[in-house]
Image 1: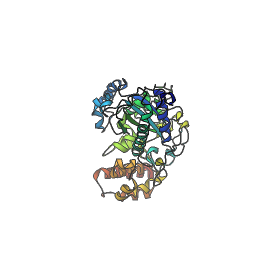
Image 2: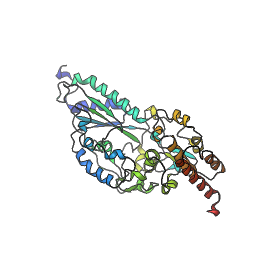
Image 3: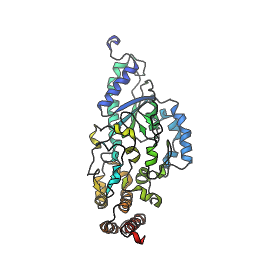
Image 4: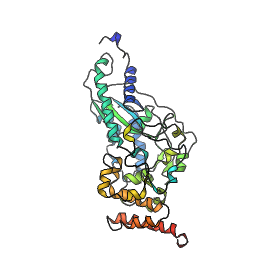
Length: 378
């Protein structure tokens, strides 16, 4: 190709082209960071201090592979740049600065990112498509000093490796880290998911943006379990998202009333955030709710047999929690639901059917229902 007539005269031109391709694939934005950026070394000590406090709960994998977190170039041999991407996932705009999920105590609340197809699959698939688009363009970039003469190497990630995902997105300016520890963006709030594409091209770093949380502490104050123990510090072991998805076995009684009707994840700290009045509707159809998971009652979910759970959660994030832990979460929700003899009857129908862990939660839920039905006896 004649360099004089190339539309790519700098590495910035390449980055802009990649960004346009990413947006055409449904990504809201992307940014670039070297695998050798000092960020990775800077992040490891705060991570270790967080782990020392026991905030990881049962997430024992957080203790592993620190060397890969510090040296991400070792994850993908030949990789030089990380493309960080974000993808909006809302299919319906929530009421600004309001947790309306609490207004429907008999409904099962599933985190908004998890109502459709598992985003990890969507993310990796589209990152691979982006990589192939990049690979096809490499002949046009031979005159640029970006390592385009070497064999092209790539690998997509989506919450699937020991990667400092949110700090990377922060470092490239996709947003800033909010006090709830999620990424925030002035034009998009926080209702988006993140992913990474490691590539062997050497492209210039993007720059971070300043924080815009100010003195606001709405997310801290709204957290039902007070899991945000300080600005920018989350006790994951107390977070409803962790408790209803990652935690195996019994959930501590002290959290059960606070969990309310949330059976998979929690959006409260996002729903209350002022910046989410700018949250965007996703162009990606995979996030569209399946099986009425955006408007389904706790009792309807309680009726699911294990075979139905496996069928309805095929290709869904809900599969991660497992059937018994899913029933555990629903039992807690039914305990917190409006007082009802029908709820008690339905809860009793599963006593002795599965295991002692679930039975214990059912007994708790029945007791909670009796308290509401007979408040003078409590």
